[in-house]
Image (cartoon, rainbow, N blue to C red; front, top):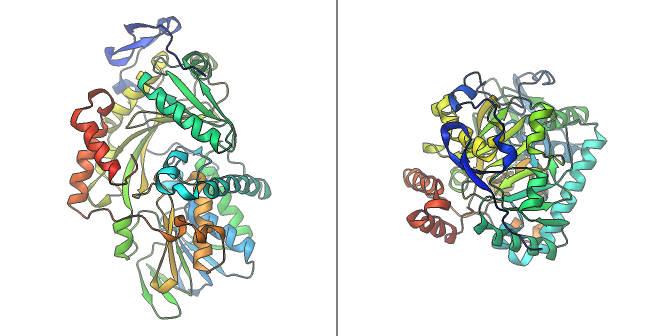
Length: 493
């Protein structure tokens, strides 16, 4: 298929008076909001958690208990691990402790796009584990099939829509990358479609889009908090004990067992699965391999039918663009647009940076939204929030043993954990129980990510890198050279 650019006119018609390529239907007169106005009434909290379906919190732990398997972290990894452990070994006494409430960490702040790959996309898999691609692709397919079956088995209504995912080129220079990705996906049997500019805008109408790659199968969108709450209910129905508002304070290796201390109780267990993401759990090696970066997300107010008609999006795919500092977007069941991007880093992985509680922090993201969809210049934002991403050097999940094999840490999804967390949990359980499993023979299980430099080098490098990411596509120069150097060191960009 030949990707080509269609002629368009350029004129100012967006918030802030910026000039963008716009097609004639974009020029209808309508209210044009400034980012200040659009964010004036915005709730600075996750859209997903502002929902009456949120279940009540389970009691916090008080006193001393024992478990056959202790899971630290009530996010996707921990919940998937609990459900799979009880399905496979019903006799196990399984306990989850969660520092806050289920879904209030990274899992309830995600964009909610379901991706087929367990490796942050097929191109990243080829980069990191080239000789294992066929098996990794098989794992990804099985994982998504199991994901769907679990939701049906337990009646989990998480607003899932299997409409595929789409990567859109925002510059004609990016079309060659789409072609290469198309050929790669086709080589490994994916049902993908390469769209030219006109066909792309028929799917989702933006003046920025020059083409797209649409992957049709085993991908789509989900309400991440509803998914977590549904997995919580499933785990409870299987007999898992969940203690919320119960952070890990410390642990003691007692030889055959580990004693974990919480603010008002202790748990003793022979096996611990750490699904704690970027939270510090007292194992320094973990902090060398995983670093927290923060993603920023906006939710629009629900679009009216007329507003939605301006952009189309009848197939409602989850979408990523090809910017170096990418944006992603998807619709909710109520037709809010979730629009994310603008990743940042804060010293020592600060989990609650004060900047993210300020409306001004989200102004640039709002400007990117209006640049992408200038025909929605009258749309306001209902919610704005940030969330942690567990970034690692290989850009994909890993599982690693600690405490003489009694503990396994699972993390490193680098932004693609909504579906890959199920695979990560399975890989972690196989390692923790020393079970023979197909991934145990592959580098994804044998090799962990490389170390990331400590502070303050980490902070300085991150600051330079994110400054380079902002504007690298247009400015090039040292910014693009810096990004190429970081990629050459093996880090996913």
